Length: 455
Image 1 (tube, rainbow, N blue to C red):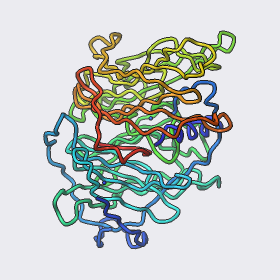
Image 2 (cartoon, rainbow, N blue to C red):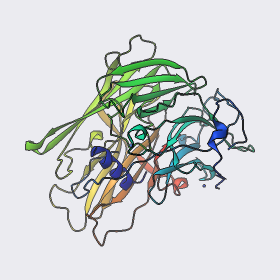
Image 3 (cartoon, rainbow, N blue to C red):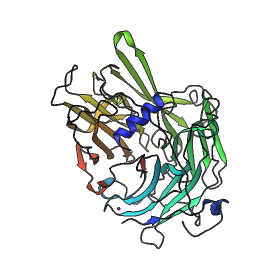
Image 4 (cartoon, helix red, strand yellow):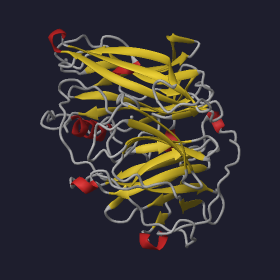
């Protein structure tokens, strides 16, 4: 998702590579799971001149056919430079960008294995990956409307398998996971083994938005509900409205410790208008899957927390903090490191100079054994012309937090605050982040706009 799109969509909620095209097929042919057919982060704080604007939100469903289900992924294969080879990404389509295609690509070469096109009026809505670099789960749904019965439309879930070098390199199989119609799905995470999927949601959101938040774990192959927890604390997973409806968070839930535990954040903001101060408080909580209980808060424990201070009127941040970006922090798969993205302006608070400002963007890591001490995995200093500001993202982390994939970019001002001499849109800067360096990941250059991505 482009930074500007993320601004617009966050504001909307705040206010109430070789391309193999897969042509749309009749979805009614795929109505029965198990039948076989021919195959087919945000939600940031912004400077005051980046005023919020309302935008329509929309999302998805797909016309595809079915293929044979494969349920047990192989163990992870080594990846060059410590990053996985294959990704699946949701790509918004012009003109409005409300419909997502699904692109499957090779991180090493930049080759596009396939681009899957949804039927008209539908879109891909979620993508999440297992640990083997070959197995994904994706969701589709009809484009949402303002009609009360379609604000939170049903989802259809598919298993995506990558088979490089085969006649069908990308295969989709419909899954029997419930469609969750009417539920506001906040986060999804496929387990490392690929056998289970965790879903964070608010049930019956269209009619009861204050319903308790739930975490559910479903079997991927049977769709059976295996475990469920709930809480009245709506700060979990970042809270409702944090993510646009057309792309769900795939970082707000993390399977750790060989799928024996789930990690999730809570994020809350306290505002003090007289002091011109907002305080954002983030925590990372760990839920032991083997423990009993059904309360998401009392049956989990806090393993990390941080705070960020900002001026809501100027968008100025007083320190380099992960809480200033609204990018969801992640716990690594070994359960030992929290990684997150941070930002801080270097230009003094006040009117922005004619030449623009300078910013520090950083990716930080915290050990769970010393959760108050930040280690800088890498950082960059960028200049942002006036009427623009930088954006940073954290998209993937290896099992120990030593290697990350992230992006940064410059976003242009929007909605009535556009300087007539504002520069053209800036591209995404993709990078492998490790050993104190942000190494450009040039093979991702054609993926300048995306709604969500998973490795």
